[in-house]
Length: 248
Image (cartoon, rainbow, N blue to C red; front, side):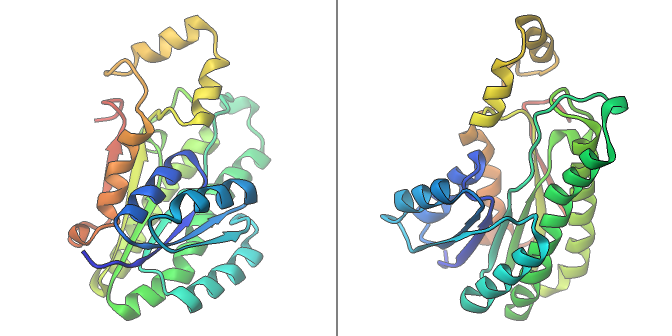
């Protein structure tokens, strides 16, 4: 395995933290991009014993600023692994109560942020003839969701479609673009939202999950690490479902 440089967007998030740890243990240099300075600096401190780590504090949804930061990262590091992990929503809102602001925010956080990172990073990967790009969708983007709302589900569906188009356009370059569609994973944020539900609601949701439980963060990470690896070179435009049987 060749040690490379990986850029993780939203690095301090629940799943991305563990992805960062896995990549660090494999010897990859890490660039951790997140708007939560305390969280990302804390993560960098934990990973420093394994590899070289740089932190970049920024808001990927502030597109002009994020593009400038990403261009600087690419110029200095030429990352060959990109993981787009921004975008999540635990609000259960009926379609009739959604506003245009809900849709604008969901598409900004999930679709536009993913697009800008790929737009900046992919050309350098293509020039080098090697790249691994992993986007985050959701089981909701594959079907429907008990945990979110139509704005979020629509945005995640768009991430999947955008991934396939970008994978097609980059297929001959050595850059592969794939997406992981996680189901209910017990990150701190999701677990907190879960605890706010009443017992009857919890029973109802669990009854709809074939495995009758949420997934763990550890279970969510393996597919992401595979798609970041050299062995994923013949997989592109692929959606990997990690959802305990919720969507088959």
